[in-house]
Image (cartoon, rainbow, N blue to C red; front, side, top):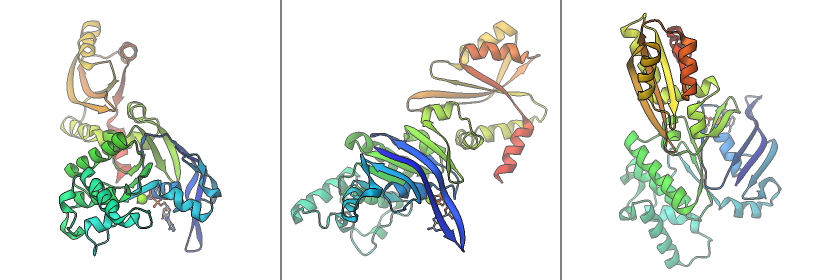
Length: 347
Ligand SMILES: Nc1ncnc2c1ncn2[C@@H]1O[C@H](COP(=O)(O)OP(=O)(O)OP(=O)(O)O)[C@@H](O)[C@H]1O
Ligand SMILES: [Mg+2]
């Protein structure tokens, strides 16, 4: 559906060249909810703006819905852009127009009659759950309601793709979840492919089927969300996930309470389960495990668990690790120093 190949984008800032996106390739399939995560300045917005050519790359190819966008005339490009809706962190609504007027705006020149347009706007506002606000003005709405209006407006031209740039970053956690539910519904009911920029792994966890992690203008890791969450490879990805699952905080408080403690992290996914494994470790190795922290996340309906445990007695790490690997459970010793280092790096 979206195929970016070897995209590079440069800007000139104070006579210096800044490479915002460096030789990035990205493939998004129809029906995906594709998350793009990364810290501020990583190049996420720039990359996503390349998808509708709001940002022109200096090299690379941009294929959307089987069309090579860089080869189109401006009239053709305008037509293709209608297939791509976009929403933003700060909603970008027109303050002096009513909700209905905001949503009807992109339909100017659509060839629909006035009553067809009115019907369409009502359907869209109904879909996003705020039909009762159609005559209100943006300032009379909450943040979550404003984002619903922006979503309705972005859907006015029946796009195949919806680009979301930090669409929930200005919302509280509960409203964020409600807006994410709406995006998921739009993806499933209308079959719209979604590309979603966020700096929160929680958002990815909730709705994304795939995810790419960006750092310094490049995609450093990408794949199915469940694979990235169960086996992140890059330190930055690991960092993002640990923050999202609160393992960091748990380790911090464990080491603060008992500094000398030897702590192990057990990770399991899918069919493996922690309880029989803990019992088996006792039976086989005579080790009693105290569970210091436990968490199970569901990524696309696949459970991913993390346990922090300490053992009473001497642990033959190689033996225990070999047994656990056979059970699809990964174990590693948590290093106090490492926890401190990774915290320092975040400061
Ligand atoms: N219009 C522009 N002119 C000059 N430099 C730009 C422009 N847009 C972005 N940049 C630079 O490109 C780099 C990537 O910016 P971008 O906005 O894509 O990052 P981002 O990952 O979206 O960050 P954030 O999470 O803060 O939104 C940054 O160094 C930024 O300063
Ligand atoms: Mg951005």
